Length: 321
Image (cartoon, rainbow, N blue to C red; front, side, top):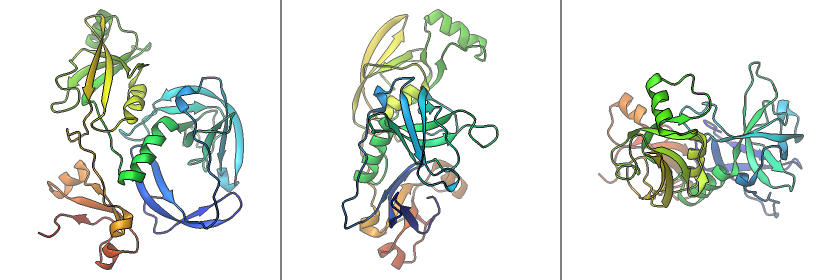
């Protein structure tokens, strides 16, 4: 939907509606679209992707090659996969061997009870066509993103404020000093902290060389599982992080902060108020334009902003002086 002037939503029964963007989240490749209808529209029950088991049957629904409402079947091949396709975004994919091709993106991944457990998102293939595996965004991430977009117009993202290295069975690519450190710690999986970012959630709570092995009672084996655990929380939430420190497990409670180092929940002025949607200007764009502040317009519909001549891409620097 990025860059679209108009959005059309077509249902399985060929009814067509005009869609309105409530909010987008490029970090997870998700958007919330609203449609209006005088009829009651059926909705799919949302299941818990965390209860999915590897080997469990799932159905993938989508429109591959414009073949509308195609359903394929397969099993959950793996969970918490990271592919690096979102350029630093949130990735903890459900991997499935249900056939997925171009056009399946945005379609439902459904369990045997007919519950939504994921949104088909990524095709991993050397040829561009189905090669055996597809990847879906789990509902554990989706539910929080959509709730935030609906309530605040922007995603309330909590971060730990660390830089680290995932520990796993394949340590051949690790630098020798990291290998040695991992061996001394006696860790077999988790995330080894290499740096604590000043002002972040971890500052004053976690330490360099801690190995994060759990969050809120759930085991953490890699970065994807840590991201998935954090993605359910907002700034200001309290979490319990389990770490391996000096070969002993330790539970540490902390209050999460956002990337700006605060516990505030930020509410975006939405489409309904001004006829526009906004986001904070990304750091890279700030550097390019030599700006220290500003709000970027990410979309405009009929309303006060459009009447004032403001378009998508404008950066608002001041209001009322």
